[in-house]
Length: 101
Image (cartoon, rainbow, N blue to C red; front, side, top):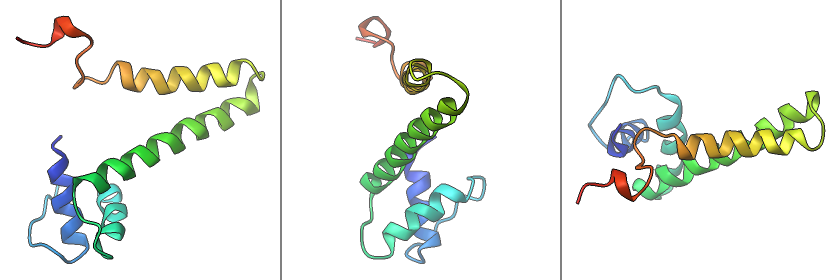
């Protein structure tokens, strides 16, 4: 998914642009459009918002695991959750052998 699709859709929701991507879920562009209205426009805002959601998801997973598991298992599970998304994301190369020369 191209990041600029989210930027275009967020600009539409902030009443700053004419483009619209109808097949995107509206939640993330709606949150991004809140930052576009005061003047913070660009792809850096998208990366910051997505990073904030990622950190909130890892903290939420830790709090959720703390209910059921011990004090040693809940941080281990949240670290596993955090590293699984980063290591196995399909768009990221897994090492230097995956990058074309």
